Amino acid sequence: MAQGLTGAPYTYYVFTDMTFSFLPSTQSTAAMPSMIRDNRETAFSPFVNDHNGAAVDFNSMAKLLHEQYFPRVAWAPIFLTGRKSSFFMPDLSFIGFIGDVRGLRLLIRYRERVLQWPRPES
Image (cartoon, rainbow, N blue to C red):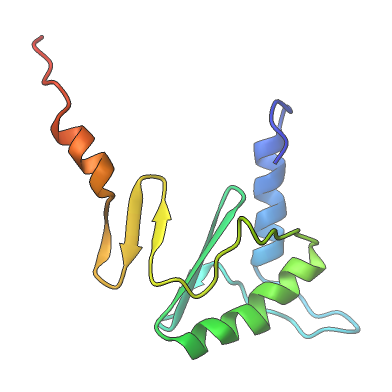
């Protein structure tokens, strides 16, 4: 996302919402349900220009990517780079937290910093 532009965050938010919410059918494609949801097998959540997805197993994630995510990326178009893209990872580090099968928790390096932070005296 370009920085320093008035209204850029809002414009990107609208673009993301249009891309990953319900898409009606066209002459060449069937309608697609919203991806922004948790449906027990998979979950997807866009945050600014980061797209995060999770699944209970490999096949559910492969289906989410193949049937929902990649068609929308091609339609939008959204450009993916190999350096910034990760798929089928056992955990996700995001804004100082880590999420995995055990849940969401603060990264150790940040936890230690918080514990060593000086207490205010006033």
